[in-house]
Image: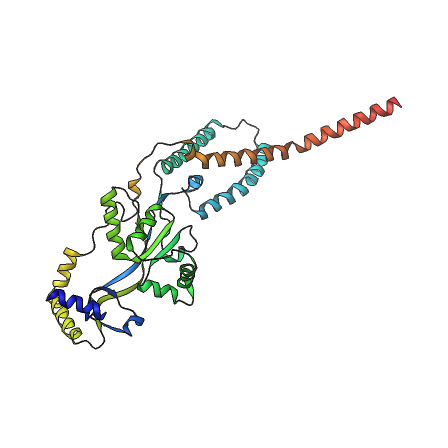
Length: 336
């Protein structure tokens, strides 16, 4: 009997109820009726795992930008003040100035700076590729969306903002609309792609991939967007809708919905892969590539000191050239 009913429904291409997590949207509500929403699901972005920050700028991490600007300002002004002070000090006090203590302080400051730099290098910071949907168009990632979902219509029908930007690429980029959920997961795992879908589905895929491979090949962007209700779908004016709503409300009031969500809810996200944890990196052995920022500072410092040296020696060089020119002119006059 069940086989006959199922076959008959397929032949007629009509069903009375869709028992599944259907997203409630305005366009869909025009052709079908939805039950009471049994949970709210946000959408998120499945992206490649966080990467270690750029080693070239690691030397600047101990301080924020405002602190570095303040230090540069003091480094520009203080030499002039100290130079004037030394001139005044030299005129009034002819005794020998103690310098050994100052040298100790300089060495201590250098050691402290090196220790801070080493700590930032040995414990690198993990940075996510993107944190929210607005950052996606400016990243190096391509994105894919599952065909026929609420996100499909959201991006394609958008008239402004980041939704329109993403929808424009979805229209013109070949392969941006996919038909199978696992295809999007595999594209992200291969690198260079972001997969936009429901957060609960992405969390389950993240956990399954980590369980299967034992590696964090995937991660989820921090900020979710476009939260929607999920419900069952009915044909228009179906008598089953009122019956299902009544039964669901009864179960909800009895606390069964909360109980079922705890037991059969979204799978855990794999611990290590769910959130960015700086402790996961641990201390690492350093190589020459880790010190590229320090070498940049060395090159810049050497260049600046060379320019200052040439600037200070310019008067002496100029006088020497003038004397040499005068001497040659005198020799030429004597020969005549």
